[in-house]
Length: 530
Image (cartoon, rainbow, N blue to C red; front, top):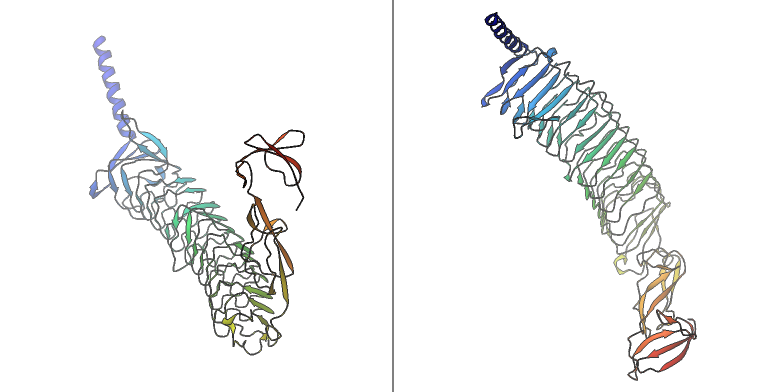
């Protein structure tokens, strides 16, 4: 009886082993020259990819698939597998999860969501799957054409910092993605995001965006919001051109240059703020932004390229002092009525203000190099050109035919800047033409005081400010004789006191007070208000 029981036990064990073996199937799926990658499919639909190296490529028709596509529900892949082959999981319509198996001491692998060891993802590798989320670790550098094509349940995509290339149609027809963040240094193929519902795009990371010969995001037809992260230093050529529904653009504070046509043809964009970090605005950056009604240029801008604001609709703009170049046709067709050209500008290109609405243009500094037909197609006798007549660089200048010479009557309105030295040495007033700037005079002096600058309405005056009225600038002073100072008779001041003996922190600005000296003597003193 005992022997029969032992035989029965052995039979049951063998049966269990046989059943388990039948419940999972293993295939060799590595490339002939790259490693020993294997795949094991369990009865619960978990496909485990093990080994080291690259998977081989498969065809889209599934003819060479080792597994039944519909049987795969979950993918577990070793972190030592480097490449996922073309069409490897294409059409696995029940695949919902991807997990990386990260080996660790003790032989028990740690499971981490997403792809954490793979370097490249082949063409069509996960197309037509049921994935709802995909996390691509920092190891992933390349996503092939159509890699996630037609993943209609996919809602969230997270890119790692290593990604450098996303192929054509890679996320096409992924209609549930509405918000996506893409690192700045990625090369993006044509129609990568066709037929989607993305409304918000953030460019992240550190460094420069790629320059594109054709706009990479035009297929994002519903895109409304673009955010350039604070680590991005350059916005690429053609980066966001011709996306008709963009209504909001935020440019990060590290951006130094904006490439040509970066936002060209964004016909719904109503306003733009260029941060102080930006030095160069490339050619045609906002051309044909026919809703652009408000532009704020940062103080760091040095170059405004050709056609930058061609046919935009704003009526006023401040050109910051520091801009050196205004390109050809930069403000062509813009309905500006007046504009001030700061003294820093040394070159204005051909047709820069052609077809504009200008009635007044004011130059504050030396005569810049002026391009041909600057004011082309502005009606005769509508535009007045104002310039500093007393400036020798303008000597002999004659405005173009039909443009009124703003200096023909002696330069127009003049204003007086009065310098109140506030007890210091006398400073003579200055007379300047309207919208010109006044030169800071030599600092006044005052015995016992240090000059603290010229103030207007209790605010330090900026001498680059155009003068538009008579003003008075008042000198501010800091009293310098105090505790520790030695008067002419050799005594040393040790403190100040009220008449009732209360010690003061500093010498009073007015009224009666007591000065104590290091020899023990005291002196009563009175100071009148200034």
